[in-house]
Length: 252
Image 1 (tube, rainbow, N blue to C red):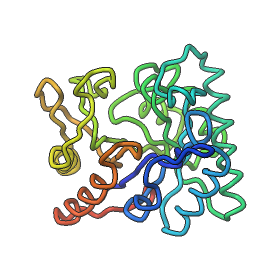
Image 2: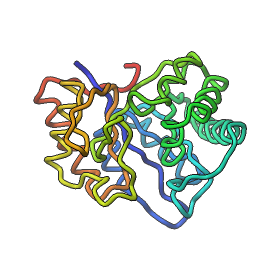
Image 3: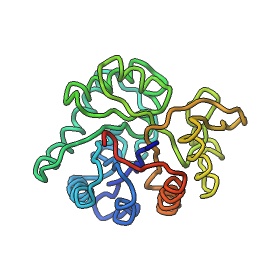
Image 4: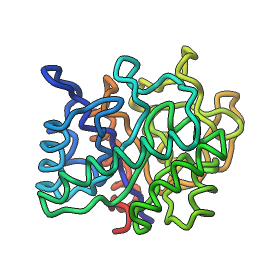
């Protein structure tokens, strides 16, 4: 049994530091690097790629909506064509820095509201997946388990990785509880760890309503901007190892 452990990183901007990338990257197997639209900038992308390469961590593009002020977590009324273009643009930006460091993008994972919109809307999901496929059909596409993100990517012809979240609660239909809800986030480390173990070993998760639902867990996400991110990553890795689960990067 094996699983990937990913984290959303590279989210600093200009003079503003953000997250604990240097401490987290050695503990994960995949890094989703912000591409400048919802967070990050050209310098941060460059430095985060160097850091990931130094630790042998899989590099992923993390394209989001063009909303720095809202951190890409506010819905925008964009057409599928517009979404296609912003995804191509951001993957292209990260690809340039990967090229100069002689590394390759391993995967793509949409960010924030773009991710949630795609999970619920097949047209948006198809636009994102098509953009990824047209750039490089060998890229692994990361999306929320059992949603349109995965099904549309498969229809396009991409290899997919179903993602689960250590620090988020779930609805009965497998969607994530909206961040607007007061209990959307899991802040207790022990609760997060138990949720992860259940998702990986039993392929189930207990929803907000206490209903047990099926889920696929190819990769586990811990949000890099969370207050407990480093603690979550450290303890999740230790617990999974004790449970006999190998932590390996996507495609590894």
